[in-house]
Image (cartoon, rainbow, N blue to C red; front, side, top):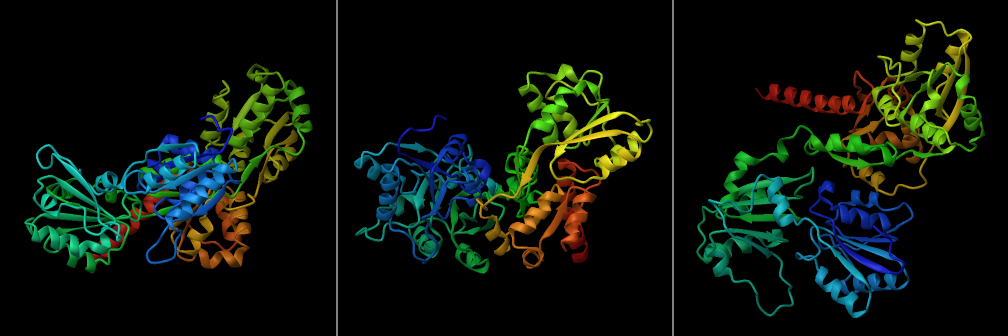
Length: 520
């Protein structure tokens, strides 16, 4: 996407709630934004796609609380774009499906502000789909009608043809209708719709907090009250609701309803997020580290100039590989200069990163930490060998110290630093304070230290994670967490992201089995 060279507004559909349903175009717009105006139905985790320096302005409405008038939002869009800013108006669902996107586009057009519409996945279709309800079906529903359940109160009379809605043989979906549920049900019944007609109410559809209540037109109001259903909801009326008993897929996944905080660097959270989402969890980005270059490349450049004098090169992390190899290429060399060196990688992911540069590791210890390297190299005579370790500026000294004790000449060069981010751009602190996080994951000791620092110290952290499970990728990370007073509930046998996610799933499945057994 080419960044506009003048002020422009993107009316972006944020989708129904699942962050994975944001369109690629929507993500690109967020990445370019100077200002993001977002509403109540836009998942706040999407704000992580925006640059750290982008201004985030909440303009949503919630219940009966105060909220900006539509005219004020229109003025804000015009003012920011007129000042030269790239503005994203992030709206839940699709901006042109009961989202007032048309009104905002009209205001922009009148002010001669350049704008673009980025459609989003509407909750009218997505929420039922995540509840196992197809809104159309060849034998059950050939038509779909999407209706507002909350008409403009200033209208002199309703614009809805209730008689036609009641006699329709297709599916009727009401958006924003929870507060008027009793009126909707009563009117459909009065206009001739059968009381046995299936009805489903889906709250926070497509999110891990999704809640679904199923009934009929005759009893849905009573059932909704019993379950304390509140907005935002999607109401589905029609025979397709019966298919939920067969097609309810989303709510059956092992991590459904769980929100997992990921403390990895933003650019490295992808694999963890993807795996968590595949089990039904909602990944919440909380980058507690930022990967930056070392303060001085001179030691690295010197080591590269003498690369052929080393017998071993030990890579301790993916970052170590990518930063060192990129610098090596920058200096006009390539992978051929590593010929004759023994290459050791801690962990399969580190070895995979090395393979991206056309080089295979000679050794990948079974234990994915410094102790594993030492155990492997202890079977070889390293006395008088030259060993290079490209790594983070701050790391454990066990590996170089033990190798030196064995008689090796060891050079440690910092190829990157891990810093604490200046701000929480995704709102994850508030998520913890609101007790909306179920699991916090740590993938290195630095993520633990920075997490505690960003929250104000160990004593400030304890009440925030009292009811939260702590998951650490390995024993070194777990030890650091325990030093800060955190109780580690989950630790895989293997120090890898797939194993960490599997351990989280196993923990919840075990708890479910215990709970089920107690009820039997």
